[in-house]
Length: 173
Figure: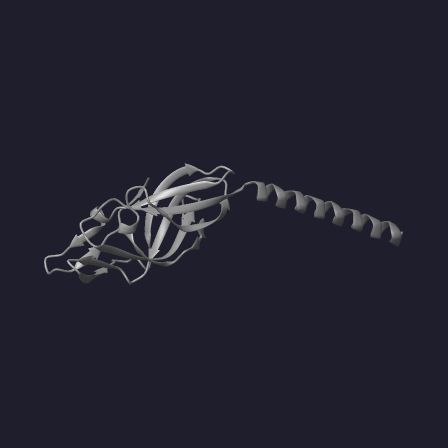
């Protein structure tokens, strides 16, 4: 009797293990590698430096689906990425599903250089909530690369008192 119970429990445990293994391999097949690239259009300044801290992606219509990508955090001179030049700023393995949003979280070391003078750029709420691009793109199981145009010309506002504000305008390229 005890042998029968032990055998039954062992068979059930083995069946559960097989089901879990199949489910894990199925989930692995439904992932893809996503690369986020950055580019910019020409702008009349020597440098437009943006402090990118984190890139996140969302696969849901609500705020529960955010995934942090492996971000190459740092200060990027947007003017280095013009005329077809771009750079990888983030990548990671994500679900092969509909990508809804990309969020850029910015730091506080943003600046613009005009006539050899460096001016700090204030970023309203960039380090708290970040800046989002709405996307509704299906990522398949092959390599996916998305190029984002960080439009410096539309993003930089010079105030009446000579200060600069960065209000990022991000476009899917």
